[in-house]
Image 1 (cartoon, one colour):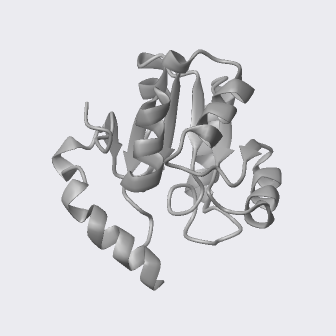
Image 2 (cartoon, rainbow, N blue to C red):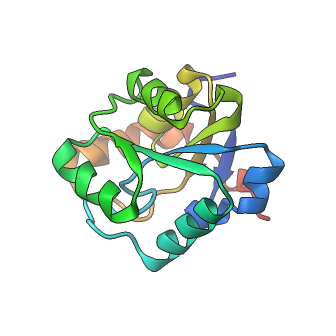
Length: 166
């Protein structure tokens, strides 16, 4: 498997249904924040993300946030959602993801990561030995570093024909 290739592809986080997670025996989720659960640097997720998270939690699926952001960004967000977290996750390095999997208390075969960036979320999940769920970003970032990163990852993006619809 190529390390930049996601296991599963979704249009957005709301496309990842509880039914899909249960069918794939995913009992724990390592979740990115920016442009996955909410728009970049937004302190409050949209209602659609809140409802999705509520449904996932109700189904007994464990969720933990792993973000490359600093604690000042991650802590209030995680507290708002009542989730455990790993800040300064250092994705694509495996440190933060492996720490999160350990906190979930699950075997890696039951865990998947969800994120919008190939170079951080997907490669990090794949290197950590867990399944990776790519979601297309909620909104384009405007900063120069992000625009450069998105341009470089463009040739590696999965085709929309790979989107799973349930």
